[in-house]
Amino acid sequence: MKKVSKEFVLVMIWFGLLFGVFSLTLSVAQEQYLDKNGVLIFEASEKLFEEVKATNKSVTTIYDTATNKIASLALMKGFHFKNSLMEEHFNENYIESGTYPKAKFRGTLIDFDPKADLNKNGKKVRVKGTLEVRGKEKDIDTTLDILKVQDIISITGEFVVSPADFDIEIPGIVRNKIAKEVKVMLDFKLKRK
Image (cartoon, rainbow, N blue to C red; front, side, top):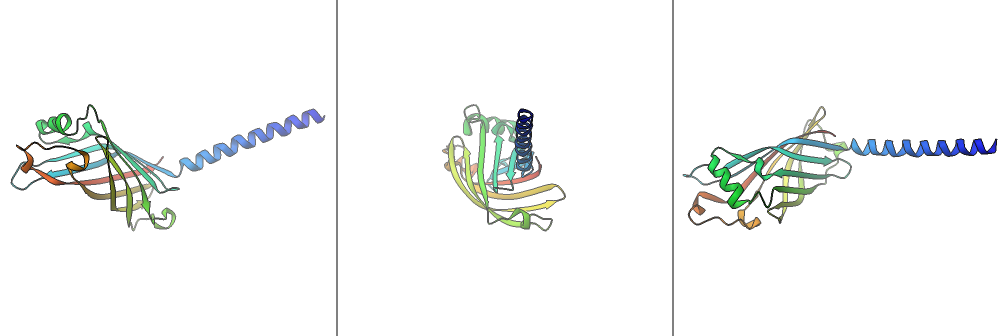
């Protein structure tokens, strides 16, 4: 009898631990929101010259409400221009997409309480993090607009970088046609993972 009850207790403990791990995993997964079709637009146009603007509609972004951590990944070949030759030059000569295929951002939302601040009214939120392009990192500190409508968290915003931040050399022949400051705009619609 004692042997059976010890085994029964061990089995119950085992199932209890499994249930606890499963519940913890489920609750952690429910804290994360994901967008695999986020939009990044960059514009480096100068007045009087051809538009230098590209859009990437396949940016992956994940936001963890438990830690306020946010991360994004954009494939460089996902940026598309109106002019296909400009797109080719961007990938081959400037970004070197074959060598540096991804841009990554890792950051934290500052002074943001998702339980209190995440609603349909929206809130301006500071984000601090690091953007990596071409193996070079740049600190980013900007403000985002965040709101939640039904089960979707919308994050929009913009920031400015320069080609020099990532050791991108602009040849003299086109230097006046490309802005020294590049405006980057983002639009993410995240759903619970």
